[in-house]
Image 1: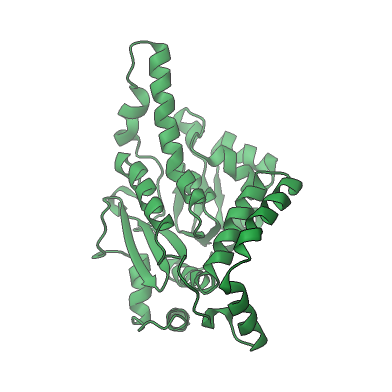
Image 2 (image 1 turned 120 degrees about the vertical axis):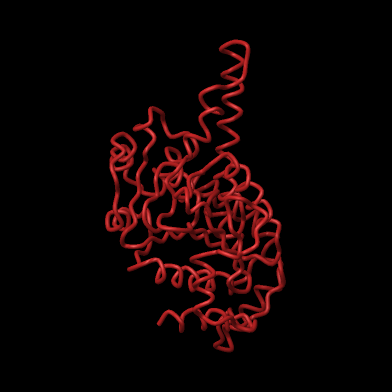
Length: 310
């Protein structure tokens, strides 16, 4: 089944297919994958799909100083890459991420520069807002971002996944808003995004105030993730299949949909409709509409249409 999924996704884009086992291996372990980053491994398992893997498995993918800037550079590059239409994020090794690397980050957070309280506070605020951008850049990227979580997703990991568009996990996955256990309030996205992801304020408060673990079944029932898979291999195959479905659609339509979903989340219905009308008064003037309509009339999948890069 796994090989059939990977093979079918690859053949939809007219590229010579890698063996299906190699595709899944490339997504679930990026050993040997070249990357300009020290904490991330970048690969392209199929046409128009970019795989970003958290890649410090020996440190349980803990988020060190380099990670916070490399994520910004990586997703800014992806946002500007016309060859990329969708992104899959995952973690190398036994777990998705253990969260912030406290030992590596302590000097930035606990010893801010400054001659007095005001100046130290000002500099600490700059550091915090810089770290917030690490995950906001995922949300700002117009390409849809799927995240595939296995094992533990702790602390900063929850900040990361709530900035993604689609969340998948394995049956052994668990999630923990850990910050209160280390003496601070989560400050890089969880408290702002998780209430809008789950929808239950009571459950969000419980998770954030008690730091208890949430396991896969509860994550699915609460809406934190949309699908649960038996193991990592099945999840990565499912993520690749879903990414292929998205990549096969018009990039004008897909990216416009993401931008407007996020805008509507943070604005009233009336404001969202007005923004949508303004958006589509230009975006409807694309060849993609006629190409997609023609494919529909001919009973063809939109994945058979050759859309221009965006």
